[in-house]
Image 1 (cartoon, one colour):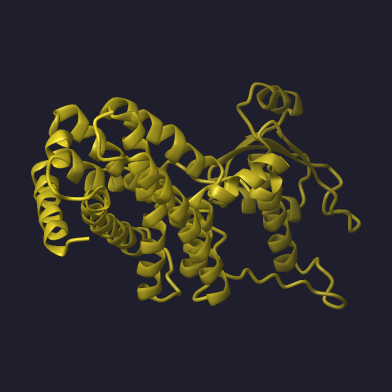
Image 2: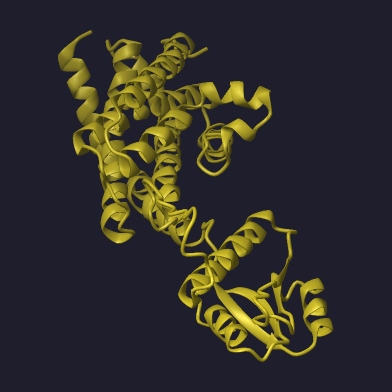
Length: 363
């Protein structure tokens, strides 16, 4: 490998990136758009859940309990005097739950209530039950209804005290964004050379194929790290996601992750030789697996066993785990080392395929 030739290729590719608006668009504008969409549009939390309330009791306890629900930010309450009316609204999907306070509530130490929940959306149904139970428990403690002796359960939530889904969605979304950037950027590189006819000119030079590949890989590797820094700034300063790890380790993890991502992109562009086809394949082979099978949104252990084995060749699986760990937990070397080794092995596999597939010829 000739250092001067490689340096010339690096300068050439860097100048091409600067002159190409699409590369800056993908590396700078696209991450911001995706992070803001995932930060605000994708949420596993629930607010303003429509809840119907019918209060048949005239006791002070019943009025206080209803007031607790009305004043909660979790529910948007609808007070009614007819259970039939609320049940009809529940069937029409206008309400997610109905709280019924019976006439005997608050009398003779009777505090039985009924909550009917629409479980067609299991996540929302579970949140409705949890939020309602928490409000009732808080109200009971304030009223002194809970027993003062005996076993007292004091929950403590580690790593995510406010129980905000954004705390793990944003780090996971950074992985998805970096996947799309790394694969999409490099998927267009060699395909663009073939379309413009400049690949023949590169092959006519004394440079070897490995020098050509490295000359295209390294500039986009640096550009990918810049995109990672941008994502970190948005996550930490805009969304105020806690960061409990070491920033140097974060860059190291990102570097290990960019290796397989960029290699997959190079492999796609080498096979496709067309920018449109390369872009489509990068979405299907890169973005969708990272979004659906990395553990970003869906628990891997809940997937069919065949898909669980398939996730081992998806680099985003390891990067999502590392990002969520370094943001919310801190530095856990055992996790980071395992994930970096796996990402390197996957990257080496795809880069080897690129080298074998890419030959210095026009066939």
